[in-house]
Image 1 (cartoon, rainbow, N blue to C red):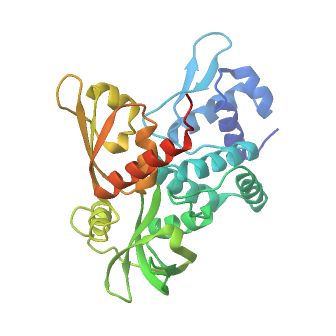
Image 2 (spheres, rainbow, N blue to C red):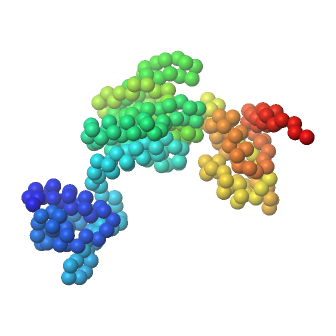
Image 3 (cartoon, helix red, strand yellow):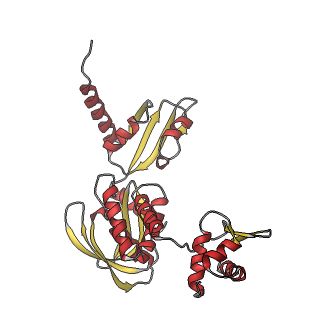
Amino acid sequence: MTTDTPARLLQLLSLLQTPREWPGGELAGRLGVSRRTVRRDIDRLRELGYPVQAARGAEGGYRLVAGKAMPPLVLDDEEAVAIAVGLRAGAGHAVEGVDEASVRALAKLEQVLPGRLRHRVAALSTATMALTSSDGARIAPETLTVIAAAAAGRERLRFAYRAHDGADSRRLVEPYRLVSAWRRWYLVAYDLEREDWRTFRVDRVADPLATGARFTPREVPAGGEAEYLRQSLRRRKSVYALVVEFEAPAEVVAARLPAAFGTPQPLGSDRCVVRAEVGDAVEWLAVRLALLDLAFTVREPAALVDAVRTMADRLRGAVPDVP
């Protein structure tokens, strides 16, 4: 019999999170208490925000149903490891919104994981996948979670950084937001030594360390952190305008094209045009467009036109002349 009420509530909650209906007598037997105690514990869970539904009848039954809010979950070891590994996978994919949410959730989960489970998560993740940006640069999951935790806790962050030209520096920043864009991670932060806002590619960050020093949030640049990143990349010419015309109806192209490319605009019943801002390597875009299996013409940028022409020549030369 569990006499510790908090421990008994956690055990009861763990049982109810199994997707089934639990008869009151079975719950009482599992917990080693009376049915009356089970009813009182159910009432306590409801007061804490857990939507427990009771079934009518002589035996009576209880089940956890969907509510208006998401209360805390109770996870066993295997469930916690599975979720952590899944979140690491989600953090490494450019699914709009999901990747950033995955990193925030992963930072919270790894903060409370026991040491024995952290080792299991790290071992499984290393054996099954690697987080990469679009150019193949690897990012350690720990780097993402340290930065995410510092940003969420409004804690100053120190790290080593290698710029595009190879120059190394040490940075002390106020981290505001991790942004996933074009299969890369960026940190938008206020650089204390340069006294200005900056963006950092996370795959060029090394040895991030939360200093423990809190900071008062500043007013972010107009449009928010994501817009500041977009403007910064435009200035660096890391983002360019894509214009591609397709010899296919807009709805056909929309069904095959990733959502990040935007909505195709009709140019008639059987033609359309796609206009979007992209930050991927032009070689990758050339391959991605070819894999759509649709006739297309690249109008902009010039670098992509050259990449498609080079790829076409290379593929043409790879096919032997057969009578």
